[in-house]
Length: 212
Image (cartoon, rainbow, N blue to C red; front, side):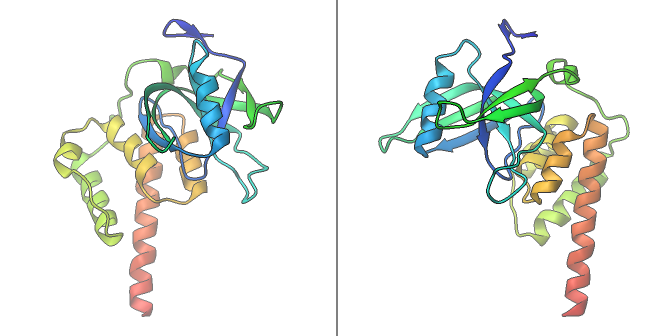
């Protein structure tokens, strides 16, 4: 399968990082400092596709990986004086992880099945049922409750897909919830799930306050 002038590979390096998901048509900044992942970036930069697969562990040991991840192309790179890499991944496509192996590299590599994620390669998705005012009000309530801040002017101007996907990546949700958001097939499903998660957490917070 080809994408933007390069073929999507059968295998790709895996960055196993809990809580980090890469949603369709987004970018993910990463601070790389562990030796194995510094080597991973070096190796990825030598390939035509420059892809890294972001995937979440399903256990604390990282031995069991989620069955769906998301691959990003290195679109930004900066080496720091202390040896760290600051990189930015531009999302290319989600994938199903067929299997993973350590091999000779100091990081895991995965066999990727790219089928079923054609929407990731196309134009931005629309969400006909999205109500901006109610969605923004819910997001404000959640962020106020968790003492989080954001650029509300930019959020008010953002298109539905960018806003929903960016929040799904950035908000401090549980690992399982982030994985469910990543696996949502359409923007509408992802937005409805995100709204449900925020409302659930807000109701739980209100109940805790009453009990206190």
